[in-house]
Image (tube, rainbow, N blue to C red; front, side, top):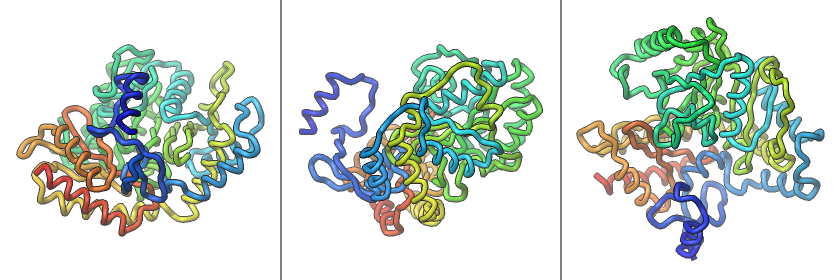
Length: 428
């Protein structure tokens, strides 16, 4: 049946629509931290639909909220008052840390980042955008134009002038040998120099932890230092929290809080985990920025009642069960367990991350060269062992991505680590 579905997939869907595994997997249902395929095989899920199943598969509180809302009304658009949308916006605004915050809902992280770019360029009257090398911000025309990852940039055409800044990858690039303080200083000087050669930019957009790029991040405080320089010139800071938001990093509710010395970002974008699988994204911004548009703008599907009901139920569960604390505790155990295992495996260059957002970078043994074939082999071996993980990477890098639902238990973390260790050893 899966082979038949795979053939049908190839006959009607784009060739560039990637599928994992030599024999692609059809996932039919899930519960908790586990999913099942069409053949009845059970897997521990360490990727959560690309960091989207944030709390748990088939979480009763979310499924109940969705079913009850579906029995009333599913959709009406933003042209009508919408109680679930207002309620979720109120909670997110309060949690954002942004003063006098306004929230606009979208259907995805791509659309959220697209909206943030519209706001920043309109507010600043500039189409110059600063972005980080190795970044990923979505697949729309404007977000591809600011993505600093060649593997996800199918065109160089863009409505924006994009300039790329150093700092998103700590252990590679021209500043990798410096200590953290010197690394930050060098990146700040690079930013200052760059700003001296270009017209005033609208904003810097940055992921606190780069997702598709392999879960890389700078030392804490880099973006706070960047913000001081940007503030001198009136430029905005956009924090892309599509993958880092809602407590996934454990130490903080938002990834930007590791860089919060200079205050919150001007704009925050979010998506993925808040809907626990429902299509929810959004933008948070100071009122003066959010209200700068002087033309009509609505959303047909952003903020629709059924997705807002899911988001409210999911966020409530996350906060009431302290899943951020669980990500910190269980994620800390998991990363140490993986580092101990990786120390014996020559293909592992680095195990990095925080909370339940962990990357394992693979290289050809004895070199710094990427090993995409090894990453693919580990992905296959992990699946054979009953574990689903992700992969990513940027310029000449390859990494495994580990991001389970935030309700992961200690026993499940240990089980997943054991399977993953065996998969890594199979390529050694």
